[in-house]
Image (tube, rainbow, N blue to C red):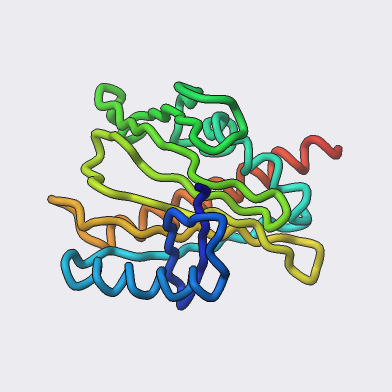
Length: 196
């Protein structure tokens, strides 16, 4: 079994898919599964995009795809390291942690995330939060790098999650947008410095 992902109408969906099922059947299963799940449990969905100026998708992808080194491209993450499985393969679990705010150095926010799928041809991967102290019960995301005509690239981050107690959907979306902008700026800086 492997995991497949699809993006439709700014919504990201990830489901276990069996190798012997055709793409038409996969689409049908996705629609049925989601509509049944939606009726039982409403989901939060969001998508953010951030441009990496002056750097092509093939330059950006290796930095984003380095799953256990998020701290190198996301300033809010102080530490990120591998917990389980083989680096770069599906099933790997990473631990990420950082301080809640720049002023509050006593509260550490952390999460454990499992890589569900990685596709270097399409330059995308999906992961799920399996444990955290940030209130997420169920959170699955897809990150993708897409080329832009001027030689730059765009990073897309789509997520589906259960509503989190004490949080608003708008806050989760806002944090995602802020995070992705920070990642894009850091990647741009790293790549610019490596070529100068």
